[in-house]
Each structure stands twice: as C-alpha cells, then as structure tokens.
Length: 127
Image (cartoon, rainbow, N blue to C red; front, side, top):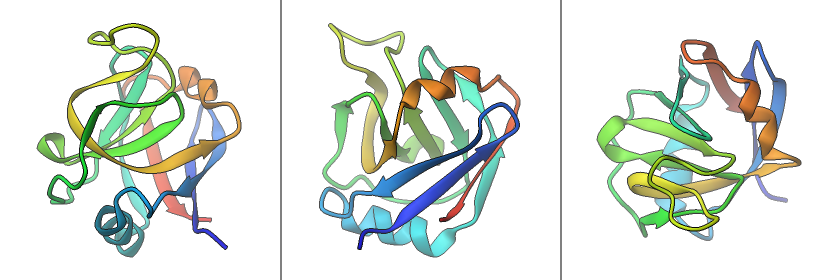
C-alpha cells in the first residue's frame, strides 16, 4: 500500500495526497521522515507554496507539471501544490517558477486549494 499525506488548513479542512516514490524516491523519503511540516501559505497563480525549511537537492526535476501534483522546490525550500495555471504556464499545464521534484499527487479535486488564502497556516502530516 502506498503512503499518504494529509494537508490541513483552515480554509480547506483536510485534503489527501499519495506519495509518488516512483518519481523521486529520495525526495519522498526525506519529506516522509520530516513530517509533520508546517508553513505559511503563499499563492502564485493557481499554486500554493510554503517554506518548510528542508534542504533537498534536485532529483529528476520538472518545470512543467500536472494539475494535482505536489512538489518540493529546492531554491525556496518549499512544498508546492499545483491546482491550475501559474503566471509562467504555457498552454494548459501548470509550470513551476523553476524546476521542482514532484513527490505526491492530490487525491480528489485539487481545485479545493483555490480556497487557501495568502498568509494562512498550512500543515502536512502522515495520513
């Protein structure tokens, strides 16, 4: 059975994501071992990101991702949740500011994250 994480914030309640250790196993392991993680949500188009203070190197990085992907952004030491287009998107896919390590996928409708407000506390823990 695959590992799942729970994402918690005031505006969404709880959402779940499934870890994708087939894509970036080192990133998945580092994040899993560091849980719970918490930060202040920032919005960038249809992306929520928050600094969690981890130092994880690039591993099979992508810049163009899928709606519902959860990734780690090394320069910002941040977790990113993509639920639509970002300011640098080309076409109909989200695009990260710079390459990210995708490590999980939202279960259900990722558009729930449109409710998250800039400055809101967001937490990730083991489900």
